[in-house]
Image 1 (cartoon, rainbow, N blue to C red):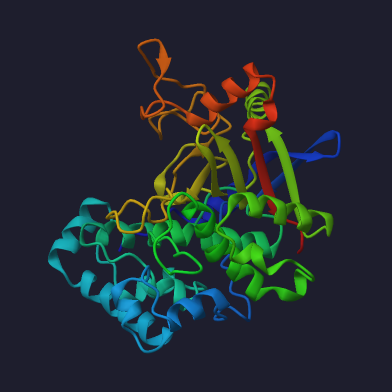
Image 2 (spheres, rainbow, N blue to C red; image 1 turned 90 degrees about the horizontal axis):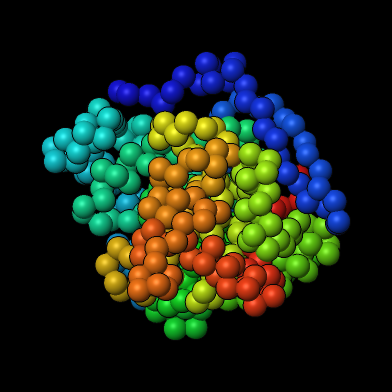
Length: 381
């Protein structure tokens, strides 16, 4: 069986990171050295299930996949999904696809190893789209090891672990809190609050005293921004709010990607905001710089449009190498790429960075705050 890159060689090499940390009116730089490994975070309460999911499971909410909605217990749903993984691995078509993806003889034992620390309720929600079976197995396998220095505290490590799994397994958008139906333009917020954030809040209550529970359930990006600000006042989280152009200038001037591993990002764009998590990159992807970051999030489209609203890896990416434009048609998150049509910016073109387009307009209007990017981290450790 093919294995990820040698952890011994990676750990012995070490990687230096110049991490930008914003304080009140100051900018500090910290250099750290850490191996390119992903700590497997499995707190004592790893099998705790957030209340929102218990509620949706009990009411058989419409957004739930069929095999989950028709299960008697969450454990039953988990076992069904694991059986599906085993069936996929015994399917010659899937095995052939895995070989083309560079993986041979993956076993159910390997999958169980790769899923260490992932809550059963999240495993149960793994996408069952037939055309994605091999890809999901591959990405779950690769998600076990991430490149570059790990986050600085166990809450951040856990949040990153859950984020990467959610993207690898293409978890569906959680449904509306009242109706249980698929969400529209606020699906991106619910995907972040109800998957990684809700689980972290449930597992680490002693490290987050007094935190507002709605951080783990809201489906409104506007409300989430306010909740993060309140958590920052209690020193439970750090919130950096920076106009897009300032982040871009910082990256160009300093040669560093100003996005820490395991942060939540709320970014303004022309038609509203988008919420996503930023994580390290799986080692198995072979990206050249171990300090690259990828965005894990959801498009926010309706649940019932096939395979358009699942969680996904690398919606966006950032890299210390400003010239690194190879992983997305519009380049990295802070790129200046625009496509023009008839003299106007084509907002629907794949090559247009909608965040940059919004920042241009906001700057011209003298209202750079309309391009603000909020970068949120857990403080508690």
